[in-house]
Structure formats: C-alpha cells, structure tokens
Image 1 (cartoon, rainbow, N blue to C red):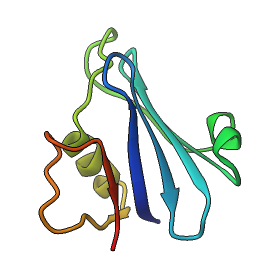
Image 2 (cartoon, one colour):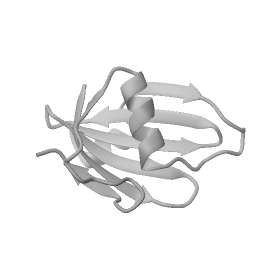
Image 3 (cartoon, helix red, strand yellow):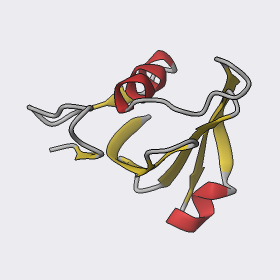
Image 4 (cartoon, rainbow, N blue to C red):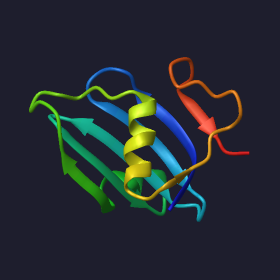
Length: 99
C-alpha cells in the first residue's frame, strides 16, 4: 500500500490521522488504549467503520499517544510505502502530501 497524504486530526489521546492511499481510498488511523488500528473506505466517512487493514496492541493499556514518526515507522513495518516530501519534519508538521 502506498500512503500519499496524511493529516493528523488529534494531537491529544487518542492519536488520530486521516490519510489517502494512491488508489484514492481514505484511511482512518487511531491509537488509543494500547490499540493501533487502520481502516479503509471509499470516502472519508466510510473509513472510520471500513475494512480493518491493521489492528494490533502494544504499549500500556492506557497508551494513546504516538508521534507522526512512530506512525510512519509502524506503517512501514507492515510493508507500506510512505513517501515524505523533502524537508518534512514530523515534530513540526501535522500534514504531508507526496509530491
């Protein structure tokens, strides 16, 4: 899978992002209570309850914060391609779109 756009929608707990794949489908990504999940749908609102692509548990049962860099690392661990624009810095940005 290739992630082409990522927007962090919540900086608090839970950590949440919306994304878009290269085929145009939307992603809903969430980390709360030690549960990390990625769902996909044809539209933004469909992704929240859409097909679950990843679901795993890690960290403390109350954990819910993840940095953008940690998210990207975890997606790449699952074999995803993530193309960041040159100069992108996760700690200073909450959105990227591949070039």
